Every structure is written in structure tokens, then in C-alpha cells.
Image 1 (spheres, rainbow, N blue to C red):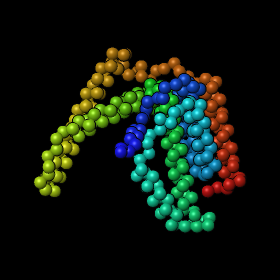
Image 2 (cartoon, rainbow, N blue to C red):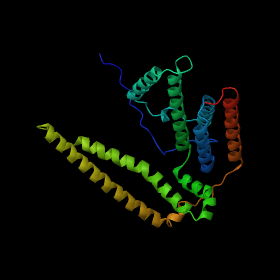
Image 3 (cartoon, helix red, strand yellow):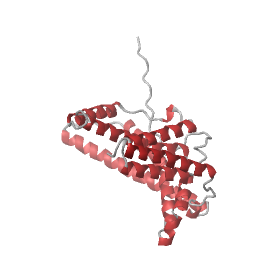
Image 4 (cartoon, rainbow, N blue to C red):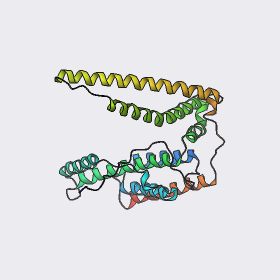
Length: 268
């Protein structure tokens, strides 16, 4: 009698938008960057339960509007849950007010804050095309040009990094899979085992550098064929009425959370 087949863990998917057409997908990329930056700054100065809850509501609301499926969420490994339980138990032993659970509550608050920030980044990744981020950064950084800061060059570098990151991850996965298929020699001693590990690490690093340089050369040829790097940071997309409405809603929710934190819950 065979048991039930184990479900395949879902990997972490970065910088690849979830297919769909929603109000969140149609927002200007600069608006999403402003929202993420604003909420991050807010949680830095006011990391209370009210502000964390307000940010979580905004994240879940955006996910519902964008119709993000559950399959987009990566599988959380068991060791992470074990680590959280051990961390929570250790924090609970430190005691503190109220009623001796101050350490545990502080640990839970930091954990919730981390998950909210990860959710903000994931929402931008799931609903924004990578090609839209660099032009948005160039538009938002226009005031910095008065200080002679090369914001266009920074936007191009950011765009190239964002486009190359998923591609290189796939290449490294192929290299790792090919390495696992290679026959392994049985180590005769611990010293021989360390030599084998060092040799495999050097081979893997050399192959990764070679693949990276080859991909960079191909990307450079493609950029030259399409008119140069200036085309990367150029885009006609600009904020619209929906973007202004989104910023107003986020500002109202965050302002209400700060007011609740300072008046009813008290500063922490």
C-alpha cells in the first residue's frame, strides 16, 4: 500500500508578474514604489501593531484586487517554522511587561513586520513588469538632476540588474542540476573530501562566471541593436487619476493608523 504522493514545494518566484489585468496591475510603477517607500519609512518610525495592521490590510486588499492566486506564494520550509517557534520560546523566556510576555510580544511584532515588508515587495513583483521600473525611477529622480546626480545611468543599471537577476537564477539552477548529475568519487579520507568539495566549488564558480559573462555580452548586443541604453529608461507612462486616488487612500489609512497608535494604543 503506497502513501499519498508528497506535494511539490513551490519555489520563490521573483521579478515575474502574475498574469492578469486589474486596477493594481494598471497602476504606474512609480506609484507602487512610492507606496512601498512610504510604508517602509512609516514602519521604521512607528513599528506598532496599529501601523503593522494597517500595512497588512493594504497588502491583503491589493492582493485581493489583483486576484493573486495562492499558487504564487512560495512553500514555507519546515525549518523556518521550527526556527520561529524556537525564537518565540526564547523571547518568551526573557519576560517583560505585560504579564511577563513582553519579550514574546516584541518577537511577534518583529515577525509580523518582516512578513508585511516581504508582502509589499512581493506585490510589486507580482503586479509590475520589470521594464516599467527603470523609467519610473528616472521620472521620480528628476529633481536629483539639479544636483548633477546621474539618475538616468542609475535607472539603466537598475533595469539591467532586474532583468538579469531571474535569468541568472535559472542559469545557476541548470548548473547546479548538471553538477548533481556528475558521478562523484568516494572520498578516502576527510582531507580528500575537503579537496573534492574545494574542487567542485571552484568548478561551479568558474562555470557561473563564464555564464554570467556570456549573458552580459548577449544583453549588450541586444541593447545596442535596440538603440542603446537610453531606450531602457524612456517610457511614456505617467501617473493618472487612479494613481492619485491610490496615494490618497494609502495616506489616509496610514495616517489613521498613526493617530490610533499615538492616542489610543500609546507610543511604543
